[in-house]
Image (tube, rainbow, N blue to C red; front, side):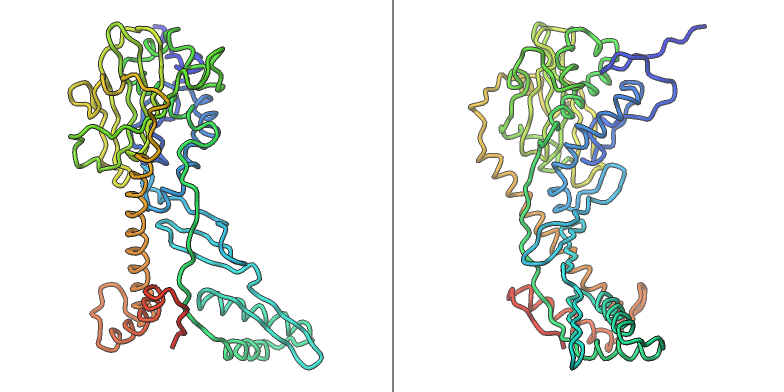
Length: 396
């Protein structure tokens, strides 16, 4: 008995028996739905290091800000080396939790009448590490090798430290949804959903060759991108179930009996891309939609026809570039940014209380004593005053 291997809907080559599943909506965007035997490993890899990566990278700030986890549960991306004020390097942990480092964290000046040490640290642990490094450099300079003498030098350096709490600097970053070749990734997602809904044989039709070529190499053979891709700022239809949130991600395909087949990709409920998958009828009629809650990735579904949150008519509506409303997109993004601010403050407060309890010697599950409670109150008061006044506050 001969087993015929399915063909890849992109390159049309046979798909090996053993192949990794393909996400319809990227894992990085909270996608959980995977399919098999639709795209070959080679195309999956090439898309992953190219257009898919561009799409994921272009959304990293919004995913970090809102602490959006990946579809597989991995944390939101960390942003390293963010530009900060003056001489600061900033690493942004998920939820815009700032970890700062000075470009000139340790400076040692050797002079005739002594040694001057300048340390800029942003935690007690970092101060200890830099003081130890300074003591060892000084010891090497003056020829001391005794460990006790080095420890005394470190203690002297730390004894003269002055600690204060600084309000977090303002973070400025670009919210992007389509850098590089990201739109090819969106078109690919629509084709993969089509293959899932109708099967590889349908998706391999020559009527999809133009968009297939665009996905593979970015070329549209004689056509302009705007002939196949239109930005959409329309508000989403009412009635989308609450479990998908107010800013869902959507991937859709829709076709009419005697009309073209359209793909549709919507990010965070804010901005959409309508993609013409085929300019002529292909036999596909109806609508298939993957809808996902980016703030809670376990809430997702692939829905068809009457169950779809977007109708075939809505997805396929003739759109015109001049109708795009930047103001509408900005309004939706402002909602997300405000939410991100709440997420960031909540995470900061949670981490602050955890640090205070740890310093007070209170472990998880312990009953907090009056003494530990007083220590916690002293610990959190300085950062809270700094946060409320936006001033530098000395520690006590």
